Image (cartoon, rainbow, N blue to C red; front, side, top):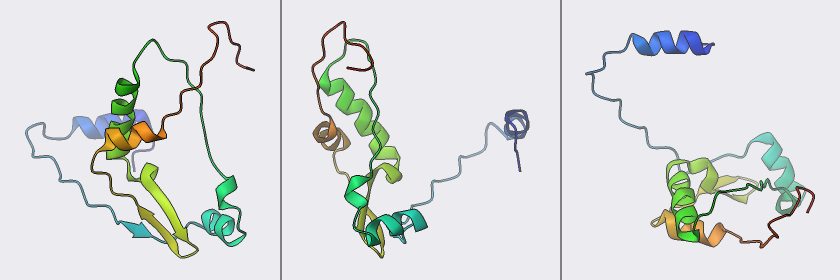
Length: 118
């Protein structure tokens, strides 16, 4: 409906700023697999698929990183999805997102003069 940033901004500008926000809809806790996910599971190769990223950060602490990652995990169910078999996936409930996130962090020491290839 609003296919450009300008149209979206115009539509948002028409909203009543004093209106009550629309409550969030509870996301389903399980769902069928998408076709690509089903293909990976049925071929027995789902453990070989992953995405990763390396980022360079200013000086920080593990606790701050875990807190930030925990906040993201707490708000985005898609990042907590786990495939349960060829029938679908479930969303992992997270009582303490920062603790859950801390277990996902891996510290890899690198020399200060490391290049992108290292």
